[in-house]
Image (cartoon, rainbow, N blue to C red; front, side, top):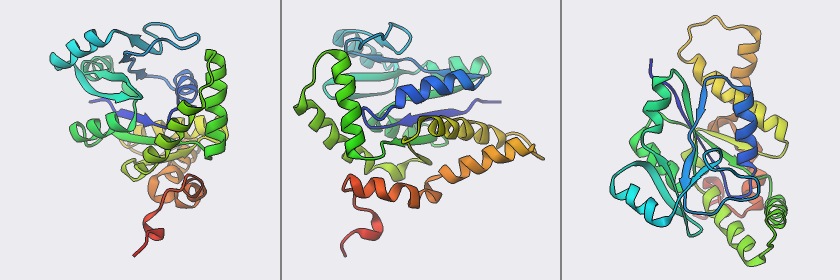
Length: 236
């Protein structure tokens, strides 16, 4: 049986890497695709763990050889997912998780329509700005111009939320990780005939509440905080 492809996107500074790292420690048989990037390592990042750090020339060479499933220019740095990541994971009987931006996610959906897509939102611009500043301090440079650019980009990315099957708001880390794990378990149950155990039913209920179609009440305050105009609020 073919594996399941999961992808998660979020504005920079939303806590996506933390959520993904905790998810990987909780869920079995979930392969993480280590992306390629032309940016330098941050803090304690290590080659081959968070990213493959390569030169722009090497990245361009991989583009020309059609080695990427998707790639994008994000804040002047290239990021890309190697095409071989999917067959490698599925051959080992594992599902695959992609941690990619909105641009890359759009490319993947075009190529693989049945991908399970998850969008992670920060709870507010103020919280996002706080997280971005903390990360910048850890890196030794706090540039308000860069932070403001990322906040503006976050609004643009959040405007694409309807392209995703599931929506999470990362306000409480433990809850967000539980919701991510529930989504993985629920999607796996699609291929498992019932009846389900009480714990499986609980996970299915959590995942169902995270579906985009059921998330309006929870995400409405976030959209309003970022100034995102929803369809119901759009001018006639």
